[in-house]
Length: 444
Ligand code: CTP
Image (tube, rainbow, N blue to C red):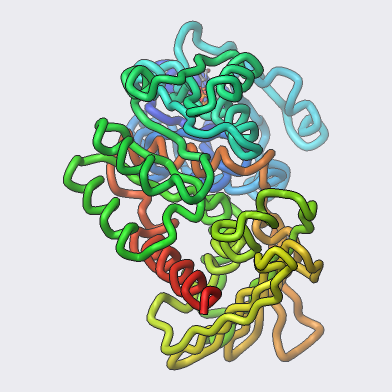
């Protein structure tokens, strides 16, 4: 019996897929089809896949060509599958010609001619209206946003608005997009906005954008008061618009994996989370000179609070802040301590003090350790009482990592609510509440 294997995403199942499977089956007697998981696709940079893995498997099965369907979840799996399933022929479409020649040592490799003029990417683009996003504010982060957004299919960066026209013009020229000094013209030209302006302006811009019927992706911290967060979410709901806080860590595949392991119970019940992130800034930087909106906690607090809120929740019994202020009265280093009914948490961040940035999650059976830069999660370990046992996990984190949140934002725009678990509205409201308490405490 000749055993054949092939792999693919098989998103929005089309004729090209059907013909490939038909010919793959004809190469032998028994066909195994590997279908990629959502996480594996994200990790290898294939963003914007529409169908769930279940739907994609069902579509492959419906053809009647597959004798067996398996899941493909990591790079390097193919080699092992070929051994495990005693495969005689490995086959894929001709778009991969040469790429899998390394498998020739263990089986025959056949590249089947790809069907012309059809692909999942093409179908995704036809289905989707290309979302035009406009940027408000054009600082450092906006410069990272544009190239990342260009990697996500279904979205185009239309233009930039800044009340300082020279600045918008320079940015627009650099990225070859439109620059706007008239906010009404800007709103007319876009479907959604990315707010990357100074923190103090977020609330006003979110309201403005929602009032103009635009979806909003807003940089962290979205707003600095609990009431404001609730208000803007209520307005978004009323207007049937998507409002999304952009904390890149929340959407990246490595952090998702880490949370999955933490929730799985392997380290028992979680009793302590410690998160630290420090980044030295120039003394004359905005972050260290703005007396109201500068400082380490407003700048970095969203990152360090994220794992705490995800794992311990927002029902803390007590929160306290300890800070070291610089000469300008701005916090150079802040430690937040939270007490929960069943646990403790500390969030530490600094712009003027350097420390070891790590994330430690302690449970009743073991602990998870992620070293800096854990906020771009690509590696973590699980340790136990038995020190000889250490489980190691890694995941890809591509580029600046903004592509993941942009892709999830787009999925929400196109397909509604389903991705809300990565950063819930409740968590964004809680974050705004903590920012508010911090600002109150630092004024006392
Ligand atoms: N395939 C094919 N002819 C096409 C499209 C795909 O023969 N027109 C083959 C691919 O070469 C691969 C398998 O079908 O062996 C699964 O491909 P997949 O990547 O899932 O499909 P694409 O349409 O190429 O997807 P995308 O546009 O997302 O890359």
